[in-house]
Length: 313
Image (cartoon, rainbow, N blue to C red):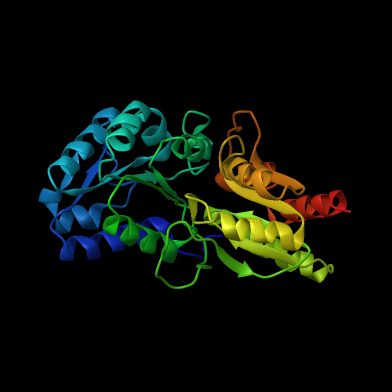
């Protein structure tokens, strides 16, 4: 995860421009975040289809819901920490309960604003959004998958929450099409399964390579869709490898790690090690530093894999 890759936000904007050219219903709503969302090209091309409500996240979601009621396809874009937390009641009612066709685009989620501290961390958003009935929750892993997820969301009828990462990462996902609810097996293995979501899957792949050099065969499942989950693939991996490590950029309380454990508890319990933020507020620091701090690194994932391997003996 270095600056040698591509910014997923660029994939987000490229897909929106493509969609807007073909469909006049595509509209963007922002909270004084045109620059940080990299939406300048969209504003230039379609100035009458970008609405800036200012720093007012509750109004942001409400305006998006109104546009959806009027037949538009609104992409509501704002910093993930504020879009998910400050406007949660509007997300619950105007997006979830009303089942409006609104696309919530969480910019710079996880620890992307890490140096600004706990107020700007978006560690809880996946857990919160999983709890909204009818909400599809997407966490694509790279530029290519982000663009594909945006295209999928535009064609899907219903509320969608999409994380739009800002940390550059080399593309590791296959070409489109994108399909919500489907896991991608990026590497096969029979000893342990690493289940990851978002950009940190790039670190899981490096960990699998390092484990292979030490004689451990690790399967890597990438879940760009946290809700609904690909339960069939997860349970098959548990039965076939007998040990699971989950990896995510955010809290393990209620998010991917919890979701995987819920699936396995019902079907085939196996040893699980969840990597992410425990029940605490992450410290201040860069995104990469915070990831490393919580063991979401190649070496940390490797250690977790060896731990669950010992537990399954």
